[in-house]
Length: 370
Image 1 (cartoon, helix red, strand yellow):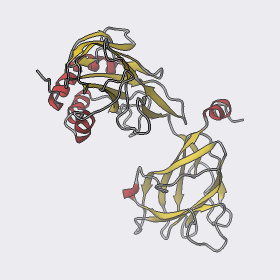
Image 2 (cartoon, helix red, strand yellow):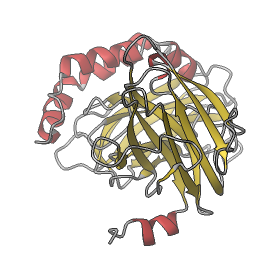
Image 3 (tube, one colour):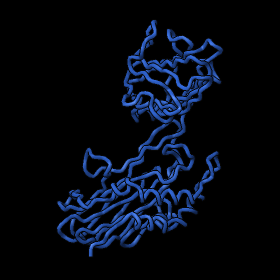
Image 4 (cartoon, helix red, strand yellow):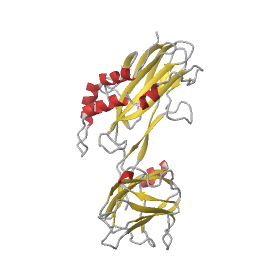
């Protein structure tokens, strides 16, 4: 008889691991300023996840035709979601909980036998013991104290049948200022249809791609007008800043009493760096104005002020968490940013998200600055 895997079935399996997850997550909670984890909220978020459109899209694989290495058509997909934002940062970071889901469906014309799944986690994550669930078969490894990897003996899978295996993991410490890839790929061994690597269904460049999620370390503060000098009030000579890591922050306030109505700074993007986005992290208005014009230039701003030749836009509170240069990246070269305000007292913070070549970052950027 064909087995039907529904969102409700998956939700039920997730709740079976609730009590073990509860204790494990509480044990991993740090003594830092992270907020207390509300596990009931965590469980509710999981329930909502399995009723979401994303879940349906990820696991509605009745027409899947992933070609296994043996020439069989057995779909083996693996997804990852952020199950718990432990520090309420809005980003994937240290201490957060990831949920991995592995989905196998037999789209071949023969019954598959002897299915066995093994999943060794990324070195920067720890398996939450007791979080492993499966809709079929026996969990061999993953639910005992000190288990570090997942093994599930699925058994046989007839034509058009499917099975889902899920587990959770916590992210270890991510160094300040770094963005790392957390990579994971499972292996499915069978008796008669070959060995199959899991594939990320959200990536379409190649078959059998590992499942990757990016984790971000704490933001490094580069420049704070409240602790250092004001940014240049005139665009002719912008304040130089130096990008140091992959997650850099500046803080400013546009406005002295009717005098400082510009904040202008300039920086260099080195050959080994790409700035993928500049995020508006915070923005507080003062007076009647509820927005701030900004201009981004290649090189220095022109003496006679004009629109930015790289990008121009408007900062508002509705733009929080979004890049101020959407759809663009900064490669090697000099750039300048000028924020222009008619009413003084607009406070803001910007976060530069970069990608640095690994060998450069590891050798020089990790060294303390003199």
